[in-house]
Image 1 (cartoon, helix red, strand yellow):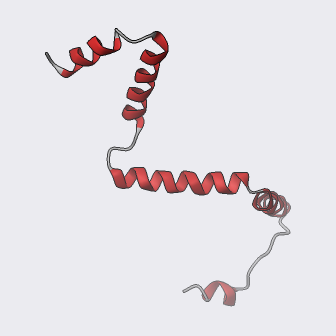
Image 2 (image 1 turned 60 degrees about the vertical axis):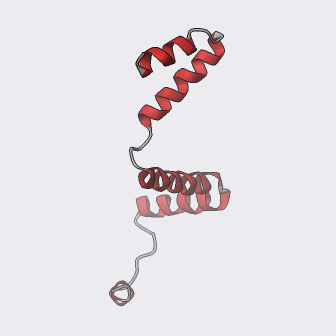
Length: 86
């Protein structure tokens, strides 16, 4: 018996709610990154994004920055300050 048939035989005996859990897990497996390092990177990026989105202070800073950028009144570093990063 191949793996697909074995999985099918097990799943068809489950109640519908449990079968949907198996399906959700399979779909998750299909969507996840192929290598563990990609998964870790994605996870860290997701954690960082969630941290920013859930941090009211950072979101306020971002909103203010967008507003001043759109108005052309935001902070503009001098050439000397830009060169310091080199």
